[in-house]
Image 1 (cartoon, rainbow over the protein chains, first blue to last red):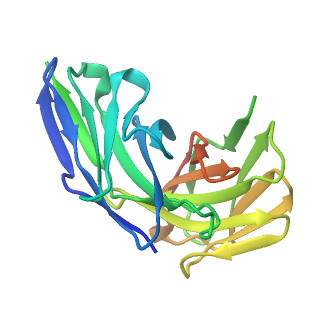
Image 2 (cartoon, rainbow over the protein chains, first blue to last red):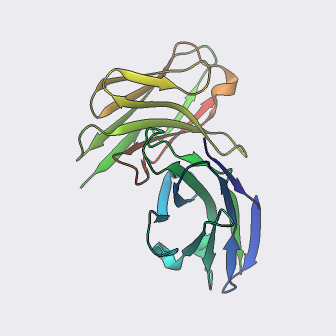
Length: 116
Length: 111
């Protein structure tokens, strides 16, 4: 079984500042990792995913994340945030062998608030 | 292209009334289907998932049930709603191990 810990429940930042949203996972098997974004009263939208290959993954809206296997982390970063990035962000993990029927395990989410 | 439809967008129901939320997927075959609930401040809770027609797995004991009468249709139901059933319900699908595509969600308020 896998678990995900998002270390910050809320992250306030000023517009144009850099941001890092932290995610650590626990798993006894190899994993795939995902970040999703949720705007108010909407479903979740995939930001980026790590399946294999380069540990630095680039996603939509200028976000990127780095997979660190030794630290079991998958932190999300953006060098300069906009007001429109205000949303809740979820980190998720799954067993990459398909043994869990492709079920994702989600963290509890981090609310990113970008202030002018 | 693949799309997922979820309705209604909002629903206000009295305690003790029945519930039926529907989710349909287009543009893919034999997807895995999922129902999640999101309560305020509590993240995403997996309620049910299905790997095929008539195959339903329940993740948590509760007042809800799910059915998959067709390959691309997933229904969440309750015979009698409780106040604690209020929340934001999300349907999602996947094929393979590459993440989910989510519907737009249903905001259920039980009064």
